[in-house]
Length: 74
Image 1 (tube, rainbow, N blue to C red):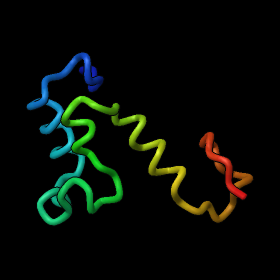
Image 2 (image 1 turned 180 degrees about the vertical axis):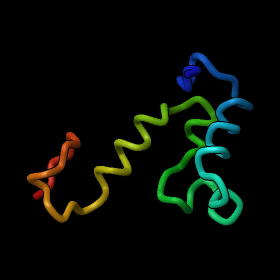
Image 3 (image 1 turned 45 degrees about the vertical axis):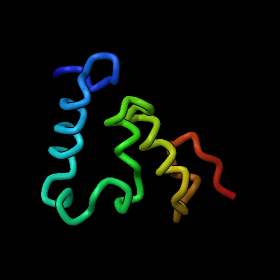
């Protein structure tokens, strides 16, 4: 598997990665309306992992005791 890190990809490759990852949702979703600003990854500002971790921390977990993320839920 090829690396998807910013340092290993071009802007065009990152856009393709996002487009392929969102599939059919890409056309109707845009970048920001999906809840994650993928443009930050495409522009080389934040890694996908960072964006996904931030998004996961924003959701309420029904069973926080079962959560394996590093997010603190009260």
